[in-house]
Image (cartoon, rainbow over all chains, first blue to last red; front, side, top):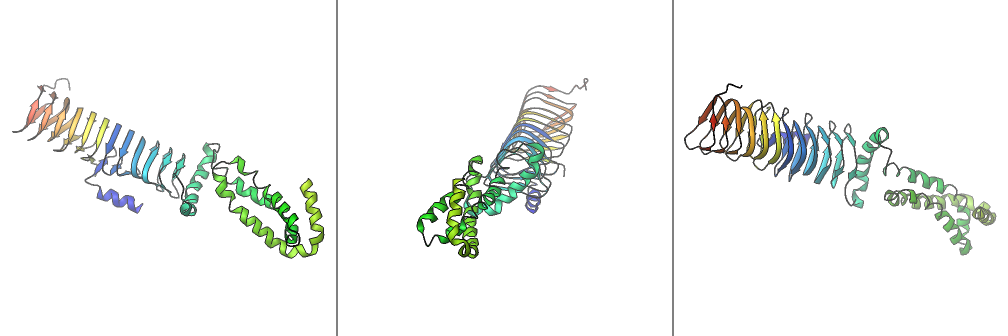
Length: 241
Length: 107
């Protein structure tokens, strides 16, 4: 928001579309553009587009940066970043390496940040997904994003049935044969959830897997010694089911 | 500041309408209709029909101009098209080709 105000203050010489102005057609340029009125059609800039609270843009937008405090209906394609401030309202798809959606902003559409770098995952993912989640239920029957929640929920369930296996896992040091057999069934329950969700599940499912195996091994420690002998047989029964 | 400025690197292909002062330093093609003043600055290029209250042109305009008050062609401007307004001023050095109509009975 601070950046938006600073830029707006500096752009007195630059292009400003005043509150009572309507531009319909194609607008291109190599400088910052501040929209306080309406722009409809197509908007292409090699620099920053600022849509102020009174501004309305109904256009396909291609810019370097976009700061939306007003209304945008249409797709935004930015080479650098798109920011929806707390006053911003937007319907359309965003395609940019950096997408910032602030609390209070309203947005309906898709976000594409391109190839997601692993280092960036934790910081940006939640910020983008939350607003989507709030708007989705009212408008769209979820396409892809609603799915990720289920796979994380599934692995825990899958992890609990294999919970009995841990004892045999503890017995593994004694006999290597059963241990490998047990590890396979525990792995099998996990794959079924992923097929439902395409792109998201690999990332979402991967963390739970190591966690579940760790839990299994750690949980097995106290229980195993008591049941160790009989555990093998129990596991075999479960396997047959 | 309710001023609309079309910067020098901006190209607009379409229609501009509104009721506030518009300053053009860039390029506008299509149509301009305002209820206020239009300023086409030295770097401004307009290929459009213009309908406003006042027009001041220092740049290049191709198209018909209809103003309800005044049209002013400044030095070094280049205008091609018909002008229709009750008051029309053409400064020394201005280049203009087209019809002038100061008879505004219709309006």
